[in-house]
Length: 186
Image (cartoon, rainbow, N blue to C red):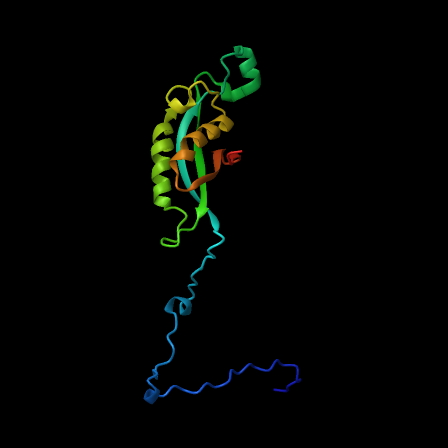
């Protein structure tokens, strides 16, 4: 093969003198970090700056509702809310994305254990709303027009204190595969 002379020279580290057993030094090669050799890199945090990470858990549930305002006439409700104002209710297969954030715990490598987030969301939300009527059966929706926007706000009020020590960062509530609402506490 013909060389053009443009190749980078290889860096060759200088040879170190090998330790001698007579000097009390080990003749074993220096220990290599097996995690690093396997491609695992541990992140070391600077003490003055905490890394904040977001993590999301997704849950699914089904419930029914009628979007209507009791202060308005039937005709006005029908005009404003259309099919969603069906007096015999209608339902949705909801998907809720619950995002929490916080610093990464150096002991666990977690912001919070997602198993704990799942348990809280299932207890506080899914068990309360799944296969229920938002207008009639869900205490935290009482007296509220059960639009998806109001539903996500009500879910936030329930979950925000329940996910500690993490902080509830965002909720994304999918009503259909084509429509969702998102709320971040502002």
